Length: 115
Image 1: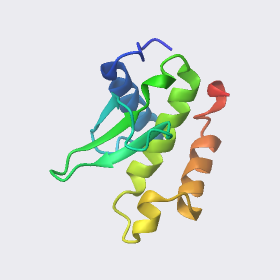
Image 2: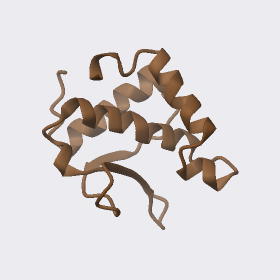
Image 3: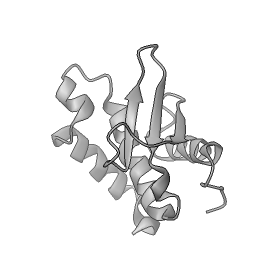
């Protein structure tokens, strides 16, 4: 990996790379930050603030685990992709559409070097 993932800038740049490679650049340009998720037991969280700003928060405890951080980012990017679905459970949950999207990424090789 040639990006410095220890900074939020590095995380955001990796998001842009994954967006281009696996989502055809169709995901919105959002920030990815090293911040504790609201549920501190989570590795990460996709958040939409009341002012409409969207970010992915990745728990700083993951900084030592680059592969897990990248897997987690891809997971959250699936939530980003499904965020505007008319069924709210699809937006936040891990149901059939979410799993279908994760499998699509796996078939494209997104996780190949990460596990």
